Image 1 (cartoon, one colour):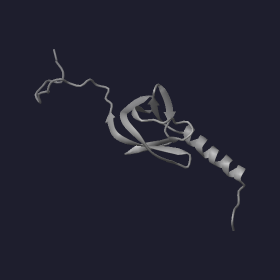
Image 2 (spheres, rainbow, N blue to C red):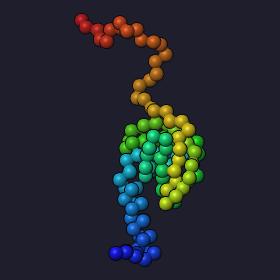
Image 3 (spheres, helix red, strand yellow):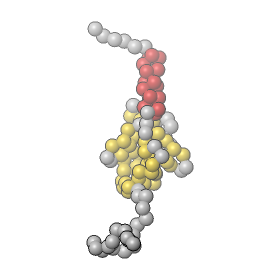
Image 4 (tube, helix red, strand yellow):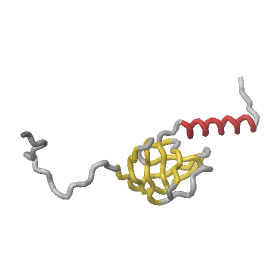
Length: 114
């Protein structure tokens, strides 16, 4: 049995899939002060919707919800099926603690007791 969908119905289904991916996206990328939802994220890159994504290149900030996860240097690799794929040249995880400018000794007390 074969199934044939008209061009309009197939286009509607593709748009509905893309909208569903955008709505359930947890990760976002900030580029030039604007946030873009990430459709897919993997170890070496991520993808965005082709129509919504500008020609991004350079430093971006990657967020998971409201948490700043990493700062990434990216380049666009290719686009297909309505998605633009970006690859990380560098991805640096962010930290909520300030960097120490000295080495901690292993016998340093954790707390002071009176």
